[in-house]
Amino acid sequence: AMSKSAVKISSDLLSNPLCEQEPAFLEMVTAFDTAMKRMDSFNQEKVNMGLAEEGETGVCWWFSSVFPSLNMAVKRREQTLQDYKRLQSKVEKYEEKERTGPVLAKLHQ
Image (cartoon, rainbow, N blue to C red):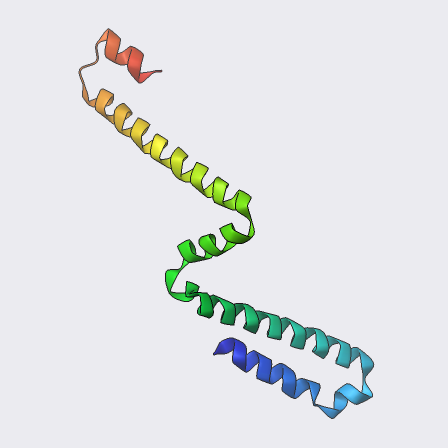
């Protein structure tokens, strides 16, 4: 709704008589109108794809189809996060144990 309002405002500005009199103003309003129409079409595309409800995950999915390297980076990040959590739980387990030689050696690896 917000982008539709911005498109309406930019269209109204374009029809303003001042645009005919002032070329610099016309250029700025035309750039603004173009930007608002692009934003509106992007928002409409998001709604059509159902990404508005999906949030960040949906946006990542949409970009991963456009940029395949992003998909790989997201997968590597998820794998690294899982590895980190696994190793963190191991460290916590060793910290709870009695402080003997072998336990301290594993803790400082």
